[in-house]
Image (cartoon, rainbow over all chains, first blue to last red; front, side):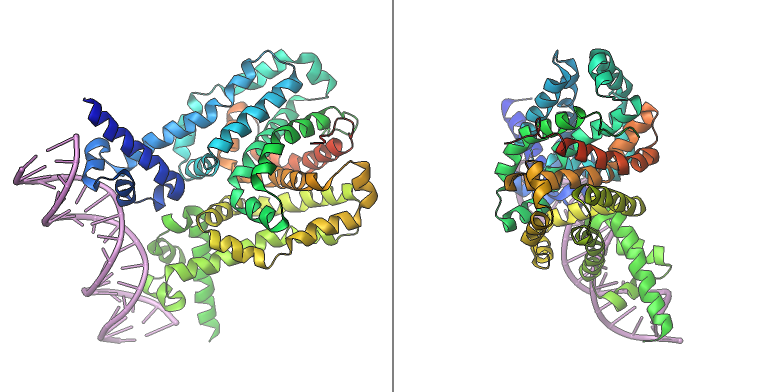
Amino acid sequence: MTEHDKLTEEKIFESATEVFLDKGMDGARMQDIANHAGINKALLHYYYRTKDRLFDMVFEKIAGLMFKKFAPVFDETLTLDDKIRFFFREHITFLQKNPRLPLFILNELNRNPARMRRLLENIPVKTLWEKLEDQHPEEIKAMNLTREKIPQLMTTIASMSVFPFAARSVIGAIMEKAGYDFDRYIEERKDYAAEFVIAALKNPKDNPTI
Amino acid sequence: MTEHDKLTEEKIFESATEVFLDKGMDGARMQDIANHAGINKALLHYYYRTKDRLFDMVFEKIAGLMFKKFAPVFDETLTLDDKIRFFFREHITFLQKNPRLPLFILNELNRNPARMRRLLENIPVKTLWEKLEDQHPEEIKAMNLTREKIPQLMTTIASMSVFPFAARSVIGAIMEKAGYDFDRYIEERKDYAAEFVIAALKNPKDNPTI
DNA sequence: GTCTATAGAAGGATAGAC
DNA sequence: GTCTATCCTTCTATAGAC
């Protein structure tokens, strides 16, 4: 495979990524991708055979990017508070650069449950929970953080980071109408979200016990 | 228009709602809708003329349902704490019955910004903010809740309620693998979310100041 | 109002020349 | 490896009988 082939193949892949992110699998057209790459439809099939295969490869790449961002948090040797700060800062910064990923991934995983199962095969879910409990036994005790509440907390954290991007069209439009700037709102959210969650956890008296 | 026509027309509308919720505008097929309604394609066009028009009507109905749920909170004469509790209970209960609405709406609003603008024309966004400030001046002061932080708080509340449903495929699969039950998780979230937010707000010392 | 049949357009995929 | 031309299927939409 020559250097030039490689360039064409990559150019197609990037164009496909762009179009799929914008329109989704069902809305995307091979013609759109070809136009975006400045070539013709036949070449798409020459390199990737079918639309399904092309989409799969784009999706795997994107989903990998997204979920890899979650894992390292568990390996850092930080206090729980700092882990929370670290996560929001890193994750929101990543999403600032890739704002269309959340909605795209949620969509396609929803439409294709088999894909979801395949994705989870490689992720040792249970370990994440246990790692957290192993690394912060005293903090978890002090915060009255029972095993039952860990999913609630983790999904809350994910929500606060991901949702503003998944709902960007809605939130952005409302902000604009109310005189706020979406980008500034996102920038501020890196700190706000972390301190909000920490404040909630540090208030064990008022903390939900379920 | 006879009673029977009305029934057919409604049957089509319900079938269209079902199929569009499942597949989205691009993925839905007129044939699917006809099959679901137990009639043939021609009848769809007889009643609704085009797929676009049918989709628009379904979307307006669904978006109305979704956003109407947000408004009444601002009219209740409750303490701020109880308003938060009221919102989560009502809204999550609503989403339990309509779990596919969030992702559907986020998607189609994202693909069609004009729709978003039209939707906001009818909603006095700024009023919501000001209502909140008018109704709870002392609580807002006590919580150190500046004007800049209101969007952060409101999107946080929305996130915590809506995101678990938008990300149901992901969260549900992870829960299952970790031995948790998604439905129970949602049921518990009604209280958890409210108390979590209240705990964060009641901890002004640790509260984000931006 | 509801059906069958089909027109007409669009999209994915391939053949074959260069 | 890249292009043009084209096949074939799928889908929206309409015509016309009942």
